Image 1 (cartoon, rainbow, N blue to C red):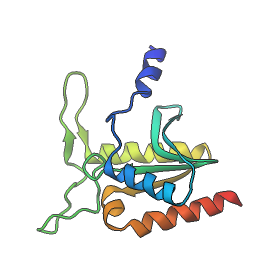
Image 2 (image 1 turned 90 degrees about the vertical axis):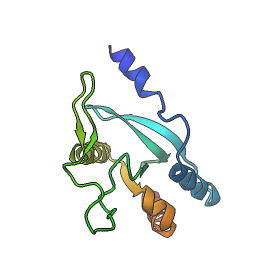
Image 3 (image 1 turned 45 degrees about the vertical axis):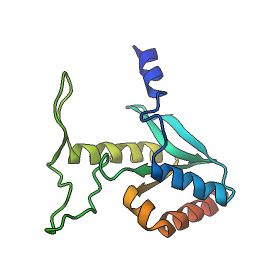
Amino acid sequence: RESRRVQRSRIKIPNKDSIPEKILQAFCNSEGIKFQTHKWFNLGFQYAEVDLFIEPNICILSDGDWIHANPNLIKHDGTMRYPPDRVLHKAHKNGPEVTVLDKWMNDDMITKGLQKQNYKVLRFWEYDILNNPEIFQQKIIKAIKKSKR
């Protein structure tokens, strides 16, 4: 059972990099930053994949606005596009339904699990990567400078 779990953890879904991941990779390449894509970590309670890993301890995740339910997106009427009680995935087979709050809590657990293992975690929303690239660029450069000290 454990070997099947490890095998499944190594499968990348989706099998292509997203546009935000490609933008992050292009930025790192242009700055001469060496990185590893899609590195897996055992957090003890689950396996987690980070989109980019920069030695010695920087984990970068690009969170898709729909998949991770960006809380900053607002509808035209001024309400949240993804309120905490909204169902993202309906219950099917043996799985429970997944709400926005469940997704946020899981993302937070992954971040805290990586931080507990002394990794610096940088999470960026898809919207910010596409529309405000200077935000992620400055944060990545700042984190690399800090880790070299």
